[in-house]
Image 1 (tube, rainbow, N blue to C red):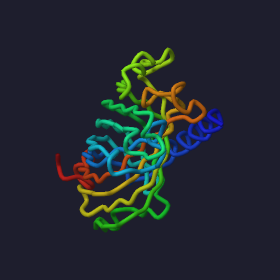
Image 2 (cartoon, rainbow, N blue to C red):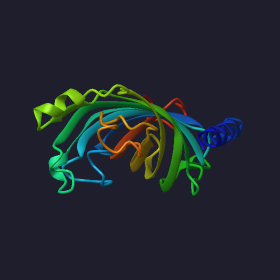
Image 3 (tube, one colour):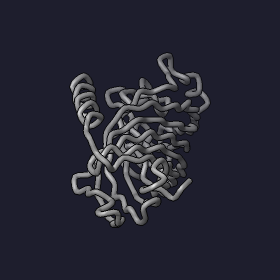
Image 4 (tube, rainbow, N blue to C red):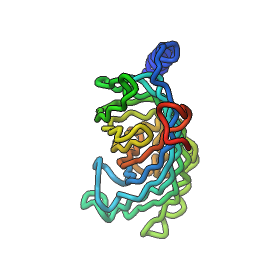
Length: 231
């Protein structure tokens, strides 16, 4: 399945890089939101107690009105505790970890239109989806209520570097020729059960995920005559 995903991504990327368009430009953006995790210590997709702040930035290149490539770097933290789950409270594990995630994604805007017509800018709002490749760094520290359990961690196969496959969707509003805002949700598969530092001492049959939700603002540069705010 992973090989199929990579092949599809390569084909899509090669196709859009060869596309011709006059609506090409760069933009730089900042992002703020929350990050949540799903794994051995948090089985639900979302919990209020598990939500942590997230901040990041990105560089985006619009290839045409329908496709863009974006490089993203985000930082935050993830944490969870068995005490928040009636089912797991007796076990008494908890963890926390700083998180740094970087990725390269391809955006597809199915309803995208050229921003300029006859030299006049037209604002627009577009939904979009995206997918790509990424990496994450998270060095989980596990704590236990029972001191006798402390010797179980770190587990022998514990890791802190992860290959990720981001997949998400959002809504983008081009308000002015040099300014846009948006919101998006991004789910990442890690292909590992060690994002939380717990595997053999938990459920080793299911890998961990993390996801983010946030808002962003971006500023266009690169085409001083047409698309930018002259930064």
